[in-house]
Length: 325
Image 1 (tube, helix red, strand yellow):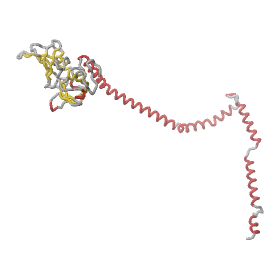
Image 2 (cartoon, helix red, strand yellow):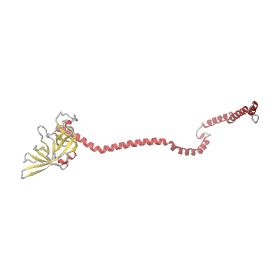
Image 3 (cartoon, helix red, strand yellow):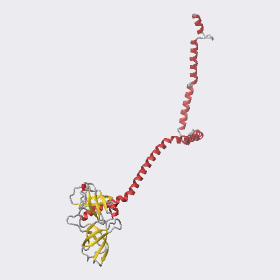
Image 4 (cartoon, one colour):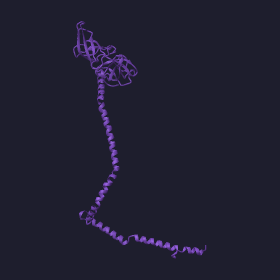
């Protein structure tokens, strides 16, 4: 193809070259820019109008010349703003609602936990008060009797098939407990230690049918022997036979332990019970008294084992003066 042919193809049918078309396009763009841009005079007029409105509105309040226009604008657009605010407000409040809900849920959980704790305390308050009263009574008994005590809890009852009235306590040889030691509580005499392991001991109750306790009537100082009937509970009683058969104890006289020289199996002076009735046998010319025990054997819990002063124990000991060691 010749150079003349190429030159002819570069020429447009309208007789204009490509460079002429490019120049015309840029001139059109410049005209569009000038047409869309506001004139300088218009800009100056708008600025002056704004300054004038600002100056007039400086008066403020109802005296402002622009107040009627402002009221008209509020009447037109106020309802629309209220409607839009009513729609948008619930959506905007959603995050705050979740935060408030979580906070309230946390407070409710804390209150429920506190209520549960208070309910538990109210449920066990009577039990706690009773145990505290028993411990206070045990320290008072040690002070009144002048004996050192190893505190222990009743953890079991004797086997029913043996027909014996025994209990198991949670203090054994490690606590200084030995067989034939006196066991009492804050009300009076409970029994004596039969057998001992390292951590427990079996106690024969004074209401057991095989139990025999030397007793002394507090008013007359007459001595005798207390025998159990083998009955546990409110109806459990002891029978007192005085050494002097001609003597008869008076009703409501208090009976205490007679005791022995070595202090075993029973130390002296421990309250046992009160005379509830007296029976006379004309054939045998003897007197028999029925004793109501001070101890409620159906609700035994805290007891104390009488131990010699200075006994080594794996637990605190109530000293003879009521202090703890």
